[in-house]
Length: 68
Image (cartoon, rainbow, N blue to C red; front, side):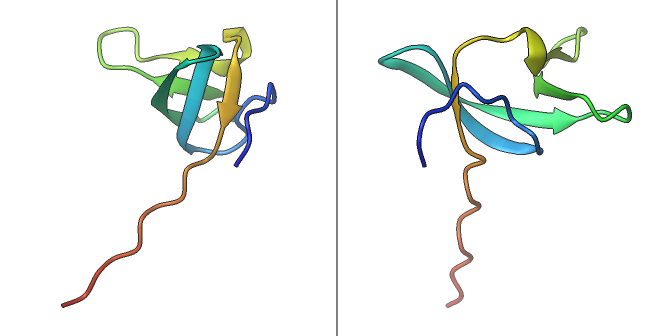
């Protein structure tokens, strides 16, 4: 996985950083119009990724299930 300025093109969990050394994991969802947005809690719902700068890495793969 590498950092890229390309915006997410499918839903999932992504690393997102605005500047080197400062990164967080965010959830990206797709709305009914096909637009992608960073999910946020609160009344505003989320932010369209087209207005976000920074670098992206992902989607982060889901962990494998461990069976006893």
